Length: 310
Image 1 (cartoon, rainbow, N blue to C red):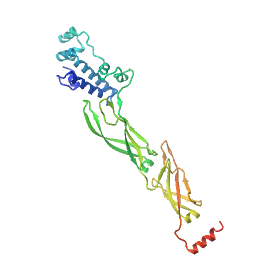
Image 2: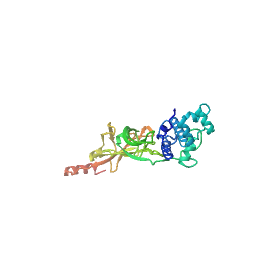
Image 3: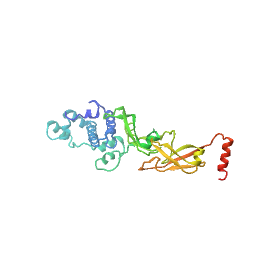
């Protein structure tokens, strides 16, 4: 017979008008070029036209009768065979209805089919609504946000196959964390939410969440660390070693008297700046002076002698 319109609509040969409408609606939602859930637009347009043609023939009692008797060739070329001649005598206009018109008729509204025209040179856009975005937090260590990292996320979602049936699939999404990203940064995977008939799939959004670090605290692009020193070192100075967030040993000299609330800034040792990868914030060292728990009489006397005149 050639093209099997019944198979295209996934119905049997005794399908009623309601069966045909339900089958068409289900498949049109999948394959409409602006609503389809397939990456290949060219394939979707061809499939949508084929579905529309099948519905046009099977929903028209006269066309369906000729198709059942003589096949689709009798509908498309009505001038040569006996079957085609029969069609020509009874149905002088063999043209198929426009796919957009069929879509508008079954889904309602004069603009219902404009989304298809937008893909074939016409104007307008799809009237399908998009499902609300789905947001998930992505926990990252401070080191991940300092050096950058790749996170693989396993998701489970429902999809519609070409026949309109729903399946659950699992998928691995790779998220590339850029150095310097901050808490609240959003990474969007367009239309990776669940698929439903007549609705554009939701975007899947991951929101960066920063796990607390044992030593360093982030303030904007700066890193802040608390450093305890003795009263003697606070008064006389010292060079001490600090292990940076990425594991380097940093020599930090103290050349001034450390007073309460003193803070030392080391330039370019903070967090990377995501929009300027070659630049970093500052490392800010907040000092806590450790006082002796007790002093002997001799120590007190020595301190008075040394500091008395200051």
